[in-house]
Picture 1 (cartoon, rainbow, N blue to C red):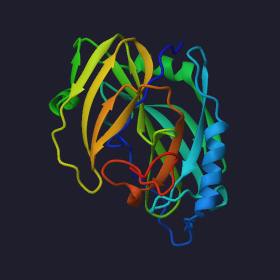
Picture 2 (cartoon, helix red, strand yellow):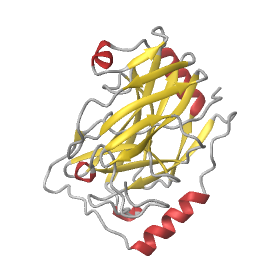
Picture 3 (cartoon, rainbow, N blue to C red):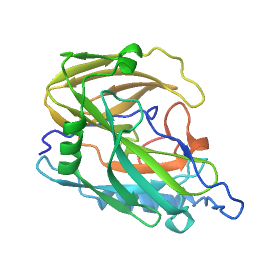
Picture 4 (cartoon, one colour):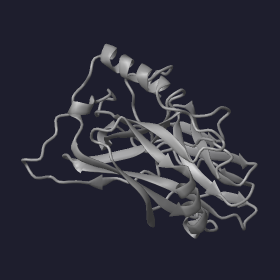
Length: 262
């Protein structure tokens, strides 16, 4: 049972794939007006229930963005879009080793996450930190801590590559859903300069409880983020966008409640 909901962000761990490039398979990314976008987001902010500490299911809104950061209406989304949640064991980044849940999202307004199933699956797959994560600068205390993260992948009949990730509707911060098998401390100093697609992320996570929890990536400057536990309950949104939308390791938004797009 999930007892602790927190938030994480950084989309360096997002999986990118290239899909059907046949000439006849072309999807028009539509840009909606500011009024339409604002109305959509306003409805999104009130409709999905937030996860309680005892809930086994969590509703998350589904959002598609175009390359410029505008919300794509349902009738403009690519066909046969499918979101797959997987398991990354032993760290925050890496490739998923196992599928947890999959959803058809071309026409979906919300998806329902089976939190109990996710927690059990991550708990059984979690491992101590991988050597690759340790070499990249991650440190976890105690060293025996087993951890795993939920990965996000979207496939569709569309030209080019797609990225997907969780986002907090109220703050516009990126989110990670992570499992720890015990209370622990996860640290990493930012070691890279932000680039066109990759941001610079440091980690300062004090997990006071074991189990499944959110972490969030809080912007501290242009392209710079610190990943930590959130101070409030996040309202998760599943965001899908073409790779061209990515900037400094995060999604670009033209319209997002209470934000300026960062």
